[in-house]
Length: 402
Image (tube, rainbow, N blue to C red; front, side, top):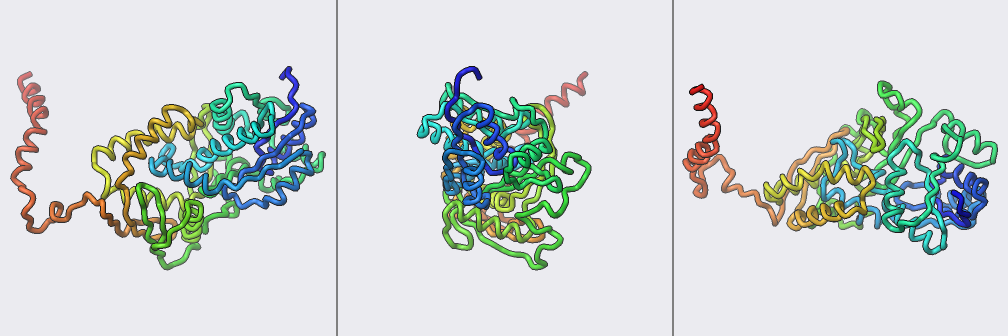
């Protein structure tokens, strides 16, 4: 950049990349760097993160507790939509990035900073997620993406830079994984995981017990929903963040929520990731179950047809786009009557629905029963079938005439 930059707000996690970036920004741009860390449930030592940022050269450090906002305004809306990318990824990182970037821009305004910076690589999705959010808030903001500028081309090079500058980082050559953690999930990439044939080492998992080592006795829980959002576990009402935290504990100890798959990144390449999403896995199963008795069939089919589009928008970073707002409004309309209780069995990596009930239920036992009933005339099905078969009969008559 030719224009002088005096102050930058850096999205700072305290990990290898952003720790090196903080020092690199100061040395390269001779500017003041304000570090910002969002507490979204990653269980980091926030006091140590602040200390490390200041020791590395940050002029100021913001550490904001955004856990409730994250779950209430980002996780729950996505789960009302049953969002899942490529049928496997519950979007833990994707959902968090727009929240972090939005708050980062608010701090940039408070600090009167000319630029913002992030630690996303030029190969990944996060650079898009961060920067689409930045530009949707301020079309003129300057963005510094070090991975697209510097000559530090590997994590090995970053570790050497950190060592030479006396920067304390958690990454080691023995565990060179890139991880992202929040209240919804933890992800792992890099290292041995770059070979899609090799299984993930058991020692990388932190949120979930191995299903083989999970308790031999099943755990049953009840989740209560109101208008599409979960509000209680076993009758105890919890705040959004506390709800997800409790569900993570229960899912984790029963080995639920591990995923290992190769996904298609927005930039074009395929990437292998390993994920732990214990609470989110249970929540999606439970939400589907309460919807099954409370949502109109055609409304459900229409909403379900939007799941791939919704999930792709989140994955690709378009959380604050007009099309995203439109789809979210429609999804939320479908959730008006999605209230009830779901009973689930958690057992050795599996989550099984045992029962569901709701005052808004569209399920009528008197219509569905195989026993005698007085509300359904089975003979009506004959005309229904003949009308639906009409086009098939005409097609076959035409073929026979040919």
